[in-house]
Image (cartoon, rainbow, N blue to C red):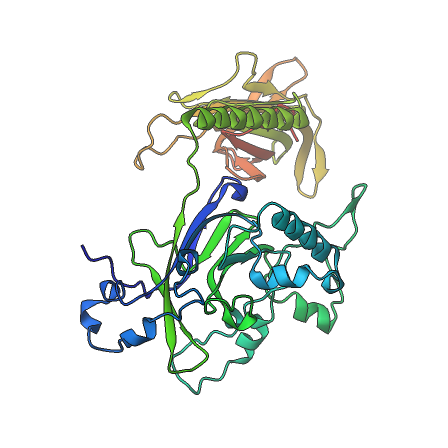
Length: 459
């Protein structure tokens, strides 16, 4: 049965994972294309077009007359930031004088251990980790169009120089950050360096040494098979994407003589082990315990002066003041007021008083009128439970009734006027006019809370 066609989609794919990236495992399979398996990978539309001469797949023979199988095909499983040395690095770091940095000396010790234990298992496939001094120039010099005369724009040139690599967290001294949060007078260099979003990234390259047999370890024969990038948000970028059900990718290389070319195929598969049900259950318990502790910590910061109201309920706080009464004939005025709640869906605490009486107040002449200043504060709270959530059912609002009375010499009271006003939803000042045209001023502050933490104290 013929195998799948070549995969020509070498674009990057983006994944998001909540698991630690150290659990990532990739299986990379690399194989030289020979005349026996080359035709199985040709799409039907391209048969007879841009085919490589089968003579180019005749590999050079070794001194013994045969070619080792490990040079023709190789498969390795690679973990995240796992270092696999190339033949070039093995030859380089065996020379102690070539080691300049602590990382070079560390690599030298690891290579010597590998040599003492029988040598490295990989031959052609190797890796460059985030700590290595390697940058794929083709990655930063990609063309946007297919034009041969394309000239990169100013933005493309600047963005190509942005290297998003791992960054150390800035230290904290006490509760004060070392760096200022706001730079009031930024310099030109500061603006240029901070203009682009610089998300910290860790990068890993999976490489292949596609040199001819017996000539491994030359930089010119190194080719990028896959680029992995992971940021601090758990976003994993893979270029090219995992092979999956698609066909393998293909790489063509030129030999010492340009008329002799060789071709390779390779696949990339995600072979990360799945979490066992017991592990998932244990992880869920850990997360639940963590979130519970965090909730308790936040509750301890809030304190006990706050209380929760029922879901879907509206809690209304009203702080009011009977300010004055103006334009009445008699002296010794006082105001009797009460709040009427609608019969449906409204309620108030049992200890709440929804009525009140001001003190008796002598009037004071203000121009042609007499004014009695009460400055009598009042407060109350009520609850509204909205059971019917349809658009037609608008809630009724509480109404404040006021009655102005006067007290004569014989301790008899007279009704001087009365009025009503619907409590507004916003703070303000309202004048209730009596039928005779006189006024009684009431000022209030309205405070509403809905399905949230509302303090019992009023403002």
